Figure 1: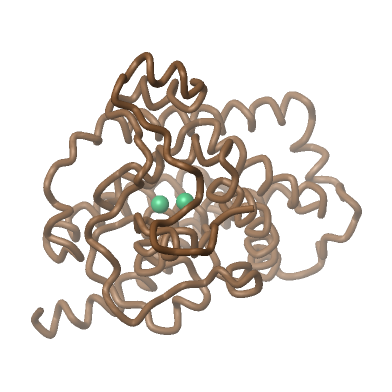
Figure 2 (figure 1 turned 180 degrees about the vertical axis):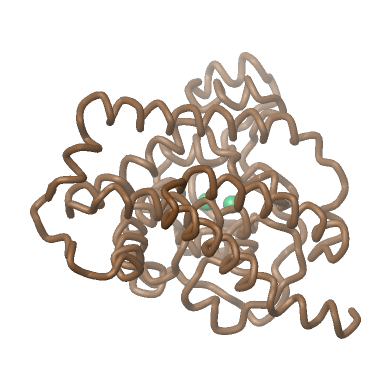
Amino acid sequence: MNSFKNLLSWVLWPGLFALCMAITAYGFSHGHPVLYFNIAYVFLIAALWRLELWMPHEREWLKPDGQSFASIMHTLSSKGTVQGILLYSTTIGLADYMDGQGGFGFWPLGWPMWAQVVLGVVAAEFGLYWAHRLSHETPLLWKFHAVHHSVTKLWFLNTGRFHFIDSLVSIVLGLAILIALGAPMEVVKWMSAVTAFIGMLTHCNVEMRFGWLNYIFNTPGLHRWHHSKELHEGNRNYGENVMIWDIIFNSFYNAPHRPPVDIGTKDYVPDTFWMQVVWPFLTNKAKMRLRPDFEPLPFGYEEGKKKRFGF
Ligand SMILES: [Zn+2]
Ligand SMILES: [Zn+2]
C-alpha cells in the first residue's frame, strides 16, 4: 500500500463519518434535516462503492456472491417495515407525545443538542445491543438474524440486509428506551442518522484503520469479527453504533490478527429472497420436505469447544 493510501486508511472512517454528520447538522439548522440526511447518505454510498474497488480490505470479497438482489430486497422490506412503524406511531400520536415532555420525565431537555444526541445514542444502544445479542443467543430470534449472517462477503450493500422481523425487534427495543426516557423527536431523528451512517461504514470492504476508535464505535474492523463463522469470534461485538455495552457486558472482541476472509454461518440459509423470508417461519419438518438434504444443526454449539454460546 502506498503512503497516500496508508494515510487515507487512517482518516477515512472518522473523516467520512464527520462529513456526513456535518451535512446532516447543516440540514437540521436550515430546517431540512431529511433532505440533507439523504444527500449525505447517497454521498456515503457512492464514496464507499468507489473506495471498495480502489482500496479493498479483502480482494476476495470483490467477487460477486449472487446475493445482491436478495440484499437489496431485504433492505427495502426492512426499511418499509420501519417506515410503517413510524407512520403508525404518528397516527397514534407518538411523535406529538415525544415532543412534549414524555416518558418518565428524565430527559435533560436543557442540555445542548449534541450532548442529548450522545445520550440518545448510548441509551438506545442498550436496546439495540440486547436485541442483537438475543438474536444470536436465542434459537427463535437467530432464525431471522441468520439471514444477515448468511453472506460470505462484506460490502456496503449488506448494510440493510435484515429479515424484516429482525429489523422490527431491534427498532422496537431501541426506540422503546428513547420513548420511556422521554427523548424529543429531534434526538430520535439524529439517532436514526447516526445509525444509518455507522451501519453503512461498518459493512464496507474498504481498507481502513481505527486505533482507539474501536473502543468507542462499532468499526468495520470489529464487525468483521462479528461475521466470523466461529462462534467464539462471531458471538461478540453486538454494538450497532457504540461499543460501551459490549465492554460493560463483556462481549467486546478484537484479536491482534486479521479477521477471517471465509465468513458466514454454518446454519443453512436459502439463496433466494423469498425463501429467505419464509424459511425462519418453517418447522424443521417442513424444511426437510422442501430440502431433503437439510440437516438442522444444534443451536449455539461449537465443535471442539466446551462452552455453549447462548442462554
Ligand atoms: Zn449479528
Ligand atoms: Zn453485519
